[in-house]
Length: 288
Image: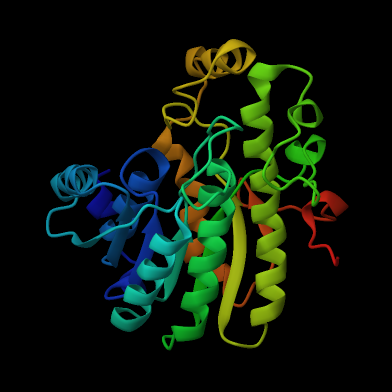
């Protein structure tokens, strides 16, 4: 079945405008391709004009006539995210926003704004972008989806409010080669906390906010610079004959974003099309 054929019978989506971050490779590119196949107009956000164009070419090859708009922004920089949010707020009114962009960086990596690189890209970017867009969306109902990780799986990596920039390496992990993954896992818990808090803030506005776990996915590029134990774990995923690829990883986020049965559902997190019930305290917003 082609991507275009997969979109048949979903005319409700034709003309819908969507925004997808981290859309130049892996799960993000697969998400854009699926949305374009449904007749949606998609704004692709990426860090490089070159990789944006290359991804758009691949998508148009699979979905002839795909309606794509390319927006370059370095999501690790708050100033870039603010500028992007301002551009999109004045030029779009999306019915769908999917935050997919994520990285895994060394815990000592800092942006020129002084933020830990993983924190800035994985948490600060969706926070700024979605908070800003929520104020400008006029096409309601609208859905905001944060691509995160299973809150149950990440219970060993609670957010440390006293060390948001991951300066205490020993607290992250006793194994230095796993510390960058632990910092990444903390930001994924931040994503889940953000889903709940933004959903509560926007309740009754016509905008719903939900989280979606894509699964343990190979070929995403997240661990391309991994070392030691992290590299070994990533190799196990890549060599697993039953591994999921980016196309399969896109399935759950796209389902959360488009399934009619989720109309009005707000502040939930989904894994394999199932809601995570009784979320653990480590994945809920905290009052400080």
